[in-house]
Image (cartoon, rainbow, N blue to C red):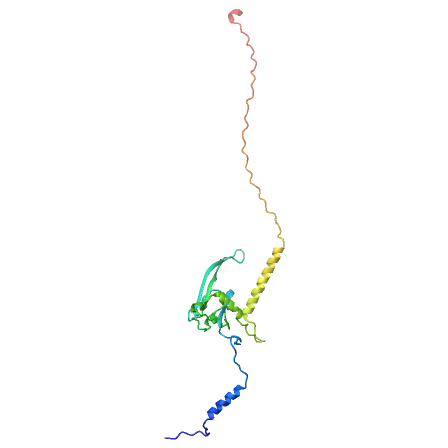
Length: 239
C-alpha cells in the first residue's frame, strides 16, 4: 500500500474560525442590501414569469393554447356570429366570439407553452406576483382580471439599430393605412351630393274603353197618298 501524499501547507488549530470571523467583520462595515418588503418593491427582471395577461382583441378563439397546455388549466368558451359582407354583393362570414377565458393558477406550472404557441400574440408574461388568495378556488381568474394584468406587461426591448422591421409591424401598418384611406374615401363620398337622375317614366298601358252602340230610333214613315182608280165601264153599258 502506498501512503497518501500529505498537504504541503500546515493548518493551525482555529484557523477556520479565524477566517469566518474575518469575513463577518469585513461584511459588518458594509451597507446592508436587505429590501424591506412590502414597503420596498423588488426590482424584477423584465422576463419575470409572474402571471399571464390576456390581450382580448388579438384572441381568435383558436383553442391552441388550451390544447397545448400540459396541465389543462385554461378554460375557453365561445359562440359563432354572422358578419355581414364588407362590400355589397359579398358573402356573409361567420367568426368566433370569445365568451370566457379563464386560467386556474393553482394548476399552472408557469411553463409558458401557451404564450409560445399563441399565433396572434394574445398572451403575455407580466411580472406581477401579488395575487395570493386564502382560498384555492379564488385562483381561477377570468378574462377581466387577465385583461387588467396587461397594463403591467413591460414594453418589448428595443430593436437592434440596423435590424429589419418585423413583418407584424409592416402588416399592421398596411392594414391601418388601408383602413384610413377607405374611411377618407367614404367621408368624401358622403360629403359630395349625389346627382339626382330623373327616373325613367314608363307609359302606362291604355286600355280601350268599351264602346256602347248608340240606340237607333226608327224614322217615322209617312203614308203615301192613294188615288182612286177610275171605274172602267162594263162592256154592256158602253154599248
